[in-house]
Image (cartoon, rainbow, N blue to C red; front, side):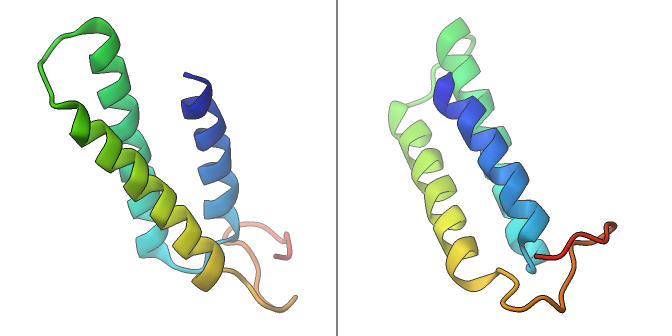
Length: 87
């Protein structure tokens, strides 16, 4: 559960400074899926192979690393959408 909380704030911050809308959406979809899989594991509503949860977590990490490497503002000229905050 601690990882879910930490990853939520990491994705929230990453999507504020990301320049790629597709990556922003993919990060949130991956996080939501990961959250649902962890909750499902706890309440055991459906049987889902544990490898699906691992794959979702790994996908989330890869998307985050990709975002850090390729989708960040490189100069002070770009702004976060909807705010005056500089990257």
